[in-house]
Image (cartoon, rainbow, N blue to C red; front, side):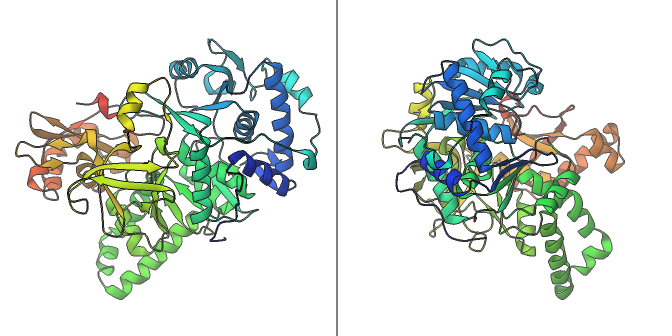
Length: 541
């Protein structure tokens, strides 16, 4: 894999990069739906873009109109998105995991004139105040028209797409809302272009490289680094079109052997805590790894196994999207696994910070990304946590139809107030403590970050997940455990509850006194989640 940028954007236009890539890679493979016979070359993509442009025109879609897009990851999703932005419309990606009501609300709030959707996502038709085109379905209202148009031929040498402007609205991305109602983040082309150029500058994938998209492309993390950047560089992207089992994911990694791995912490943590830690904690092996030479041999072998599980052909595993368990990260660092942890948010499309795995500092989330400034609102940023502020090319225009929230988020000097608390060392490495709104102030004035307590609790492996809340100056852990986990542990729910007091005492030994928990409560049935599988904290007190 190349380690320096290959893109050149003299026109300062994302659409120019898309056009250039289509022409340069015309006969190369662009997209494959893993496990199916759906394969698209770059020329095939251009053909379908042209057909879709004719479709939009026939439906009276104007440049600047909003087009909503709702489906699981697929070749069709990718082609539809590219057709929207090259036409001059504004894309409104909607997570396929959103409920019918959420989808209706987003389509209505965004003023979408058209919804491109899979009928099997919700069992269409939906009752919407817009045109609904089930392009991916078998019985779409306009499918016959599209089929006829798709026979149009496209001349590579004559292909010309429009040019976007830096401040032009490209995407309205509705956040999954782990702390409240979703907001429509307005991302201009400068943000999409800056993120694309960032990926090229620091990752540098060569054309024909194979990559794999697992995370939902309606999230900016996957969109930027699993999809749009890869298309601009001539990669061959493989989409996992369904939520697969861990076994299928590992098989896909080994079939495809991607040159880069984009992951959320949950995937890594499940493999390490579910498969590797139990083995290493067996009495005999735990004794052997105390011997330095043996420990190094064991760690080297484990690193090899873990690397192979992800195809064995990647430069690094980039982890982001949520807080990473510190015990798991510490272990990956010790065994020499090629990983790095980035920092991003939808409002920056998404990247704020990153560092190459060779220079990455453990427990950090990298350094400010190119074209971005980051500062900490603290009198002592290296030691006293303060809110993380960001400014630069990646920052959003604001929230759609919500000037009040926009004014709260972006100050008069252009600084985006992220709501995250952290520190920054003298070398620029950023360390996140938690969310500002989640921080708990103890009776004696001590700042408590519940995420840090939760991280400690989760390392014990007693529960699937937990959150910590404050009740009358006391800390209570709310924990969830699935029937499968109980079965694996050979316990009943009643037996687990009998052990909670002992578990609490054991956990408190690992926590500072001001962060001790007084009780553990089981949330039966599990926590309510966002589509990104973050716990909706605002529902729990």
